[in-house]
Length: 565
Ligand SMILES: Nc1ncnc2c1ncn2[C@@H]1O[C@H](COP(=O)(O)OP(=O)(O)O)[C@@H](O)[C@H]1O
Ligand SMILES: [Mg+2]
Image 1 (cartoon, rainbow, N blue to C red):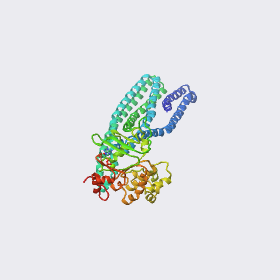
Image 2: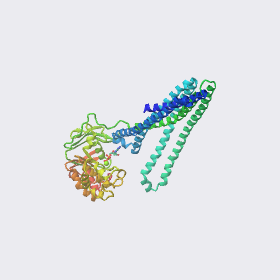
Image 3: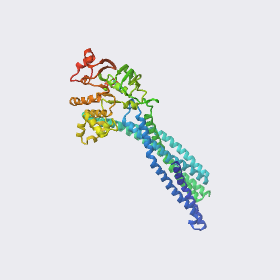
Image 4: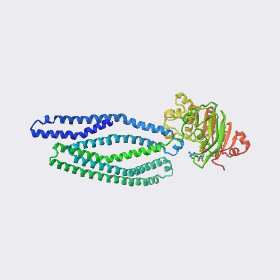
């Protein structure tokens, strides 16, 4: 493309040269009274050839753009997305999904636009400037040098003005994204706005940001307008000056009429091109700014990485050991200190404790979504930090507290547990999870789309979908984080069978608010502020008359109260 664009630029800028030849021939034919066609023939061929060249070279370059342009964007998006996926849970908790997606698109667009600006604007201009200056030098050295000097100064000033304008443009972009952020927040909270009848309040709230954007926009555009004044006036002065100057040289008989025509049209072309340059600079800085912004946000080193020598996890007995675990999400606020837990093969463990005592965190650590500051976690004597994250998470099924679904069909959502499951297997799993009934009753059955994050389903329906998914995944380690909390007691009662089936022969950890659902498990660990204060079977713990016994007697209708009374 570099070659094609250079060739095209050269052809365009050689056109005035062909015009000069034609005009000189015309003048000569007039002088010698000969047939103008004969005299001008070589020049006409040159003229035709150059025009044909422009068409062929530019269209060949256009064809390459068609081939390469979309691929370039694909490549940038694919690589950024793949890199983004490697980030830790912590990273995603502190970045907005919408803004990350936006950044990927913007970087992809920015990379393409930067390359195209260089290739289609800056590069041909360099060719145009050099070729035309060489042509002009052949005619009149002084004229050429004047033009060269003007262009150099003009380009430099445009460059620096564009640099200064970049700051305005950045502020303007920030104001725009602030406004869209506010709109997104308002729309996300539309339920609040409705429930509290705050429609007008929300409009007024947005108004401030809208007005602010207008002020900044005016300031930016005003600065650009000043740049344009500089461009237009200096271009005008030069055009008048060059024509006058060339006329003067011609009148002193220092150049032919053809040379005059060529220098005049070359100068006009150059000035025209240079005038567009500062806008190009502005755009160029905007694109590179976007790239810089997006890349620095996304390309940070991954917090949790596979070791170079990481081996796949091999689960044989599904024993789990937490050894001397120290962990905190934020400095100075430890969740666990020297925590030790050993879980034997096939054991079913219940975790109880008030909310915020660290139960879900334990699951996060076992799945290596977060890493402990010190201590080791072993699965079948293999350190989970030494195995691949992929194999680790393939070996553990976790049903989260608040399941989120893809905006894809119910079938796809369930099949996510095992991608090669047949339709029949998916349906069988849904039946075990007591999801089949409501699925077939919904408008499109298994093909029903569930809305963003699964909002079109009730909490209990979502839980049953994730349960079906877990049944398909069928790993020998199973983690349930209040997996049945959103179910009514009748449905939960039905599901107990399926849960018992799911838990068979597996090592299981269950977090539940309803203590009755834990009473039949092998062992119950009672958490209090990240410490295990009691450990034993339901009956043992009741006999101890400690925390568990107190909770058991406190629970109303089978539910654990939110905090200690
Ligand atoms: N991503 C996080 N960043 C910072 N603190 C967190 C995060 N997740 C949980 N916490 C804090 O860690 C503590 C334990 O939380 P969690 O394990 O979710 O409790 P539980 O599941 O027992 O209700 C709480 O104090 C909670 O506020
Ligand atoms: Mg929790």
